[in-house]
Amino acid sequence: MRRPRPSCAGCPALERGLCGALDDAELQKLSNTAWHRKFRSGQVIHPEGEVPSSFCAVVSGVVKFMKTLPNGSQQIVGLSGPGDFLGRPFGKETHAAAVAASEVEVCWFPRNVIEAVTSQSNEVKSWFFEAVSDDLEKAQNWIMLLGRMTAEQKVAAFLLSVARKSRPDGPLVGEVSVELPISRTETADYLGLTIETVSRQIARLRERGVVTVRNTRQVVIHRPDVLETTVENVMPVAGPEPLRA
Amino acid sequence: MRRPRPSCAGCPALERGLCGALDDAELQKLSNTAWHRKFRSGQVIHPEGEVPSSFCAVVSGVVKFMKTLPNGSQQIVGLSGPGDFLGRPFGKETHAAAVAASEVEVCWFPRNVIEAVTSQSNEVKSWFFEAVSDDLEKAQNWIMLLGRMTAEQKVAAFLLSVARKSRPDGPLVGEVSVELPISRTETADYLGLTIETVSRQIARLRERGVVTVRNTRQVVIHRPDVLETTVENVMPVAGPEPLRA
DNA sequence: CGCGTCATTGAAATACTTCAACGACCGTGG
DNA sequence: CCACGGTCGTTGAAGTATTTCAATGACGCG
Image 1 (tube, rainbow over the protein chains, first blue to last red):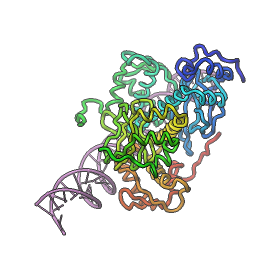
Image 2: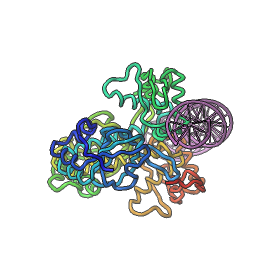
Image 3: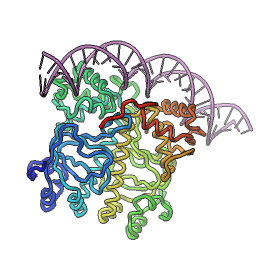
Image 4: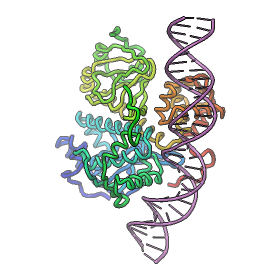
């Protein structure tokens, strides 16, 4: 259902995303054709392997990018939040499905409008380039995590990444209360673990007093420093061999 | 040591890479400042976390992109071969070290030349955008592999990816003889396994008659179809539950 | 209240790693 | 030419982290 044209004031895509890189005329052009659209948790925004006919920015909620193996096992290959853009210009098929991981609201435009703006503006091209480069960097960090970290480290890294997103400025000292953006099942698919292992690792952190679990989505991190050393050092205490140059 | 200016004729970067997207004047500008440089296996081409002062295309050999954890464990987050470009314009620091995985020859230019060409040409900007997008897609496929595949599947997928690169056209039928581009240790770092596990999985494929190992780098794949079903199906036979829509 | 979904916990199974020994290959120097 | 040492790969046995299977518990909704 078509909703009234959105006002861009206060939109996270304007403050942090592509729209902030546009000049007034370009923004006007985009917002003339834009409309807001809502998805319930689990709904597919862009299916895998199609050229999306449209393009959108996340206004609120969390979007997961999923790949599915023929045997049914799934892997989340990326997450997007408010201000992030879904899809890319220049009609390539998506290589992962974009699925709402919560109630999601997006600002939706036809792809030809985005492509018109993109092809004319150098700055917009650069913005896309930077965005994809950042995604690539995140993906490579995730490759490191999936390939070389233990379950304990993966969960610690996940909690830290959520905490850092909620505190973009400061360096995580003292108590940090965070809201987990995704369910246990999704966390497992994100970390390449089973749901049981995720649950057990969180339980261990709770037993050790590192975190308190208010409910399945609300976690208080008492000792972010412990999480950080967990991620950085495989060895729990006293690394015997300082690595040589 | 500075080598004579290279001729672009026959260079893989011209045939498959960025240089093919340049017009004559741009190519001339680039080749005027370019020179060839060689690296022995193990030498670092771009260190991690620096803004590279230069930019280059791989002419021959294999380059690995590595991340290292504080405890010393390593993960290869990408591989590049002839025709691929290392580094990106617009002065961002690299997020992985580029290291020669074999004898490597590159075509080397100062970054300001590349940036001049890039900022003036729309087509070059698009080329970079496409290249990074492709890298992102590969990285996301690798995330799937690392997160959800067994050791057996990882090794099968690796052999297939090497075989496919050697036969860019046809669909892998019959016997395929491949040369592994990287050592066992590097394969392990690429697949997120130990060297022993890689070795054992290859041994199992050999015992099952799927491959023959001529030497550590030369492998003949007798049954690529078996490798493909291994990757696609976790279950050896009879997937019971067809996944529902 | 009862049902369905999602999360937690326990016990058994297993895949992968770790530790350790051995073997193949290769260049060097006697 | 062959012995020697070094690196890299293979193989075996033991250990461990994670998965799998199964049961129970918490929460929301009709």
